[in-house]
Image (cartoon, rainbow, N blue to C red):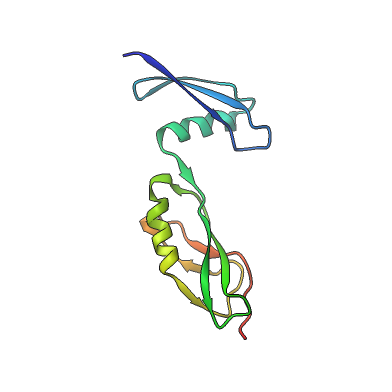
Length: 123
């Protein structure tokens, strides 16, 4: 099987190292361009099972603001982002809301909670 090279920019830290992942089919042969071990780990995860932290907003009833910023407490599989957004878009929360409140305890069956990122006071 022929080797392929996937190029990407590391997003783990502000350095933005240009990474090259050499693959033979589904097998990772080499990772180059990283200046730290975190870059290598990021590259391997990105080509085998990419994950992302989801950030969005949810509607608020009875609050001083109509929307509350939210995020997942950890990363979830990239392939589940659209399904997760369907859950987020269907959610309407009631004020008051505190930073860190768990709004969805297990988004898309990932075991990762969706949490509030702002205090919303009741009006």
